Image (cartoon, rainbow, N blue to C red; front, side, top):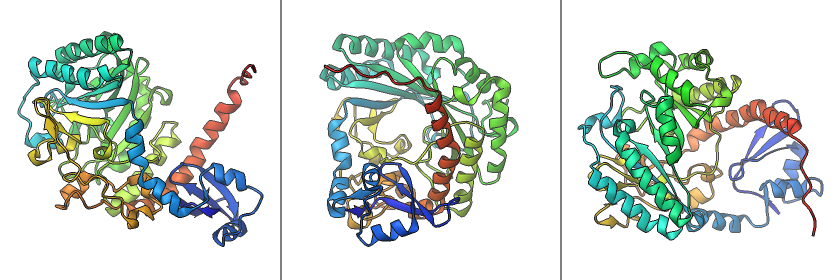
Length: 445
């Protein structure tokens, strides 16, 4: 047995003479003595703890075979998927005027037509629902709720089709939060609404500058009020887009939320995301396009610590690939064009088809499998990035066949993230386990 290639080793902060092993593939953590680590690195596997380390994915029989397994991981995930996820861009219009919006350069007030909406439904039913696929739609814009009539039209048809074929239909909203009040949420729930992504850009005085109405008026009170109305009805992801000159003020947002009745148990996750200078979709992404600027390497752990310390949930590292690698994921814009990432809208050369012509092969144009090279397969961070973000590569004027290496970012932040999880998340899991009722033994036959 050998140590996994996808393992990071950090000094234990509270146990001298011990280290922490962190599996980037499993997300598991183990503490072992420095002597045990030295023995494992020499190929001498102690009997004590052998089974546990193997179960946690930290010991493998053959590192070469492990790398080959990693090479086929995304292909296997694609082959096993039975849920199709599609982001539907209903319009390129918005009632807010956010200065950093990447869509501002090509926003034209265009709305999806009823004819395109019906063709969308026909295509999804024919190609997915009727073939036994569960379907999850993320309605996006612009501001999707400016097209409430289309959400109702599309969802009613997909809901009915899913029921008739014995599969599941659900949808979420990527919304600025100004229009999703309780009455609207209750209207949408029977058709499959399960969650929404809201955005509050920091404490009120910052948010109202960064995300004003088109009239110039602030929107914080309306968004926070709506969030308070619906957070007990659906799952809520709260996004907050920070800048270099204001990120240290953002923890005050978390202190303001309880004033509106929004407590940690009512939010699925809080995601602090840097505003990109160009091309990134701050409302949609959860930090895909992250650069290695020194201030960001400080800001991201700082904001994650502030989130966890106040009892809110923050994203944790987990195996993830760029959305372009996933066969069961697609973006359809308001004209019916296909893209593999919302941030690619506006680049005609990155369209991969349409509702009328179908899906074109994009394996070469989008650099599918660009991470299947020895430098990546041998990198301990591979499970966390699989070649990184194609948007970053595009913005650097590189071919999408090149990887967006994240080694510098993870070298600077992963140890802090693991220690934050041990400090804040592990005690919560232990407390939850202790308060849970005892398991009921399964009957034997």
